[in-house]
Image (tube, rainbow, N blue to C red; front, top):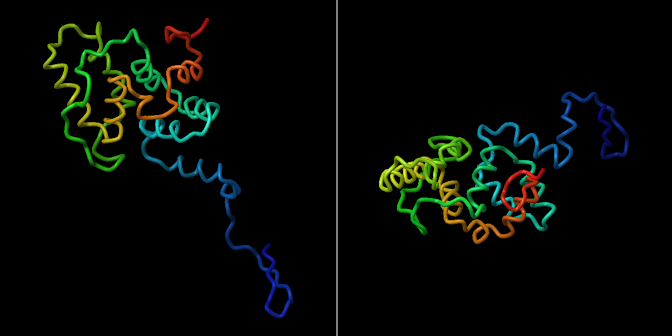
Length: 185
């Protein structure tokens, strides 16, 4: 039932013709609705940006815990664990950024995370350095420009330089890891 007031002050009662969804009245409800219609999961670069934009450590922890997944843990372990050695040259990588819109012609780091072992010490010793670097460039060119840039910061172990507050201690706290980046007993 909708109640309206006429310009002369009298009241009119009308039957509501449309029913609005109750979740649409809250900011949280709108965010949930917008995320549910999304074709692709959040990119790791988007998660990193959310962490960068969060104001304090509890909010940063919440972002990480909300997006917790095995591929995210793999990538972050590679970014922060000092025992993981990347067999790729440090610095900028000569690749052509994929400028296709998100959700179209590119792969997701979430799917490619399982292949990252190819680029670490002890991962695949049969690959030559040239082949390893070629595969890495192909992976970067398949990812969206933002995720490729994020992966380069992961390999160079400079995530905190680009995304403020995104530290090894934050990751360890979020996932309950000890100093060896393993689950605490």
